Length: 519
Figure 1: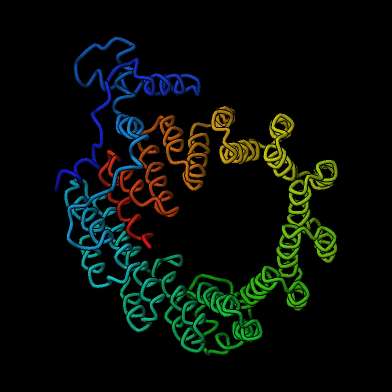
Figure 2 (figure 1 turned 135 degrees about the vertical axis):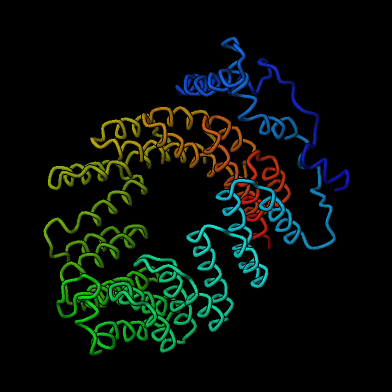
């Protein structure tokens, strides 16, 4: 590797490993403020006992910080000059191929078989995504865990299907050794069939799903075929395709024996009816999203099942609400026949009212829903929209008043993301500290940091990442930040971030992911 490539890995002198380094000090303060200091000290104490040394309390803090985020500090200290540096790569081939090769070399060097498998998985699916199918298959062979290998092969099926190589995709799918009803083999066949249908090969798609032995999953895959036809823009063809779910398969002589063999109650049309209804519901949703509300309502009304119609009407009403047609959404919700079935539609309308700034109306409707249905999730949308529209304290008041801990966590997390997107990172971190569960809090921090990275503020995203106490969470988050940088066009910054990840498996995943999103 040449000197310029080395400079990308460590582009500036190592930071002083001092407890008084400003970023280390800020991070230690954040750990204390978020209640994670004792957790970190516990981990440091374990290191102390293993080493046989009795470190003073402040030194344990320093060990935690240095081991967890030293590589982040390196990036921060160079933030002002990183934009002027070019990510030179000591490679004679295209950048994507260089990154794939680097990730593969990392995978080969990982001693732990499970982590090595995950790294090879990342390399293989990237190679498949860029059309290097033969190379991808070779790396799949290096995977030792059969389930991981099956999942990788399923990804290859999808890649081949997207390229239009249906025969090859079919051969790979049939070679997947996974017989579970939710197996990767079944999922791969379903994806292949949907891709065939999207390209107009509907009969071939139905032939593909014959290889699915489980009758329930076969009917579900047939519904996916009809949905794919609708997404291609052929609504009438999609409805005709959906009708096959209720006819073609169940006219076979082995209908009853297959149901019994699957351990299922043999009732005529049990599976095909349900997925026929779901297919029509999917089609009506696609029509509504495409602007054809009248057609969507007509399709939904044709579903010969109350529950199926209810699900379809709720989805249409949600689309209308998001589009600002509150009156139309209310009328659609009024079409719902089942008791309490209109709850999702009403909650969507509450959110749309709040998004328009009509907080009084939104609060009134959310209160009526809570009184009649015993459900206060409408106030989650009210709280988040208030934060978005600079009424943070009022929004927090509604969030804190939510009865469900799950809903409170969701509200706090969504509010934190909104604040981060508006530039209020400190407020966002303050809100995440209100989440009592450590895992939920880590997920909220992950959402905040990712939102910042997607918005192009990778430096602040990494600052948020530095507040994550668990090294595993930290590695996963920085991988996502690197991928967000790559997706936003900052390829060089993404590579720099990826190469600073301390964990080999995560670094390989990040580099492979960057190669996958290169233009």
